Image 1 (tube, helix red, strand yellow):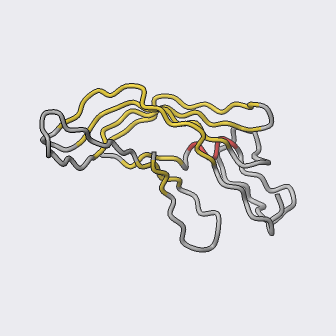
Image 2 (cartoon, rainbow, N blue to C red):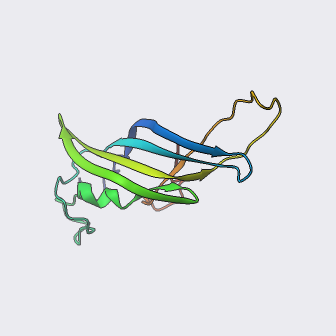
Length: 140
């Protein structure tokens, strides 16, 4: 990718809640384990170097696939990375990440005990691809 070209975005390919451990109506949070799969931008370097490349203006500028691992975080009360991997699928570099944590939720108890509630996990992508402000939240 040349410095003058627009970088392609990270693409959320898959989101699955694997385990729902608890929903706490008093604390208004829930605890779960979930899985994310991202397709990395074309031209991503498949190396495991997590550092940012020094020469960002050269024609050979590429971010490493492992660099992206430190840029994806859920917004929650507490969370941990259970597992993460990078693999090549066809021509695409793919990141798989599994998290476990406690996340806030706004409960609206209108028809207790048979209410249905929407559970939301917000994921932040800690990377700015343009020189202007951009919402880095991925809502799953």
